[in-house]
Length: 281
Length: 278
Image 1 (cartoon, each protein chain N blue to C red):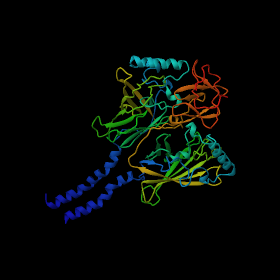
Image 2: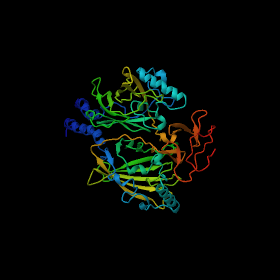
Image 3: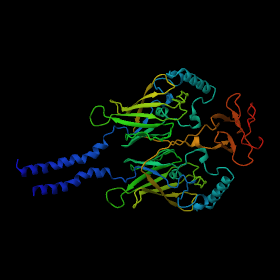
Image 4: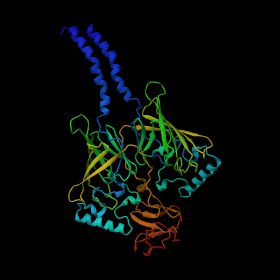
């Protein structure tokens, strides 16, 4: 090939080359799976059972240590007597992880290269860091914990298929579900999640969640599914304690019909009044 | 010579290659974490250029000016006045744009998101639909918006938003500066990057409300946070206010009941069988 032909061949190839370059940003936008949507729990009427294949409460048969099984049973008993047991949600303490992922209300997913947002209708936004950076050393512990994630291309088609997330750095108290199924007070929980779209139905999102916690005798894996909502509606949520409940510190009381403080249970001690100088009304 | 021609052709074709990328870049560079510079200074005024309370010189009608002054008096005496902050009820619009903590903006073709730390995500729908007829009234209202390319450079500069469908009660700031009980508020916003400093975001907010004698416009600004920090902060856990019946109390740092004003009697504990602890 003469030098002239070589240069012309190069020039004639240029549009194709440039077209390929031009496509790169669009292709990047297509890298992530089709998670961006509103997602719902398919069976919200079944409560917030942590393992959705079983009823909530003792029927979950969680692999708890004997100490935490006793704490769990005490919670169930207290709730049977009208108390809240280990379920602090009633005083608007945050659900935290892993309980958040039961989706008692819709959730939206937004994917950015450095962060993936799980936007809950009835809880604070969860942020999953995907920039590869380690957790900051001064990160304060939280109910949601600090989540890092990585996208996986399982079949090598240059498009991510699965999202693996690990969450640590917790504070408590936290419970798996409203029955008060407890996590350990040491807050050393590690939650690992694997999210992927159903291969035969792209409107179903799977989340396989494994919880490692000192209250458990072994890691506990549950399989949750969420269904896509193509016509999302959002309700405004603002957590408010029940109107007849009064929380002073960790103690729960009731408000009588004549607006006076009442014990929740027989024999409950009244609140400490050491800061009042006046006699009672 | 031919090599020179090749370079000329390459230079001519290059803009073609850039077109799709430019199309992806049609939104302004607002995707970031932003913070309100007036937050955390012991107050969060609605008009950030004026002091809170009466210093705001709000264009209230005489009726609502009287309600505002009554709220300020009640707060001086230890109660909450018109402010509902002590209940941890969400602030609603327009007060929610005060952002006491940082917020993140995410833009999608159909929705503009304000994602704050501790209050619900705000969605401004930009897909061209009008206000739904069956939208339930909320404290945050329902927001629609449209993007404007002001200088015709093929890139949007400004988001115009309008919010309606409210419930109440709502206030502009924690001093209890009130909006009207009829909840017919309309909030119009003009959101854009500062032309001389793209690390400053403006939100010109005009509130049209029957508590006001005229529309009230304030220019709120937010500063870009290059190293975002997220804090989990739950109002209910940090809340030192407690109401029993119609009486307000404080909770001490050690979780015990305290009076809000000197000489306030303790609550009536007639329903308890156990002796009172002091």
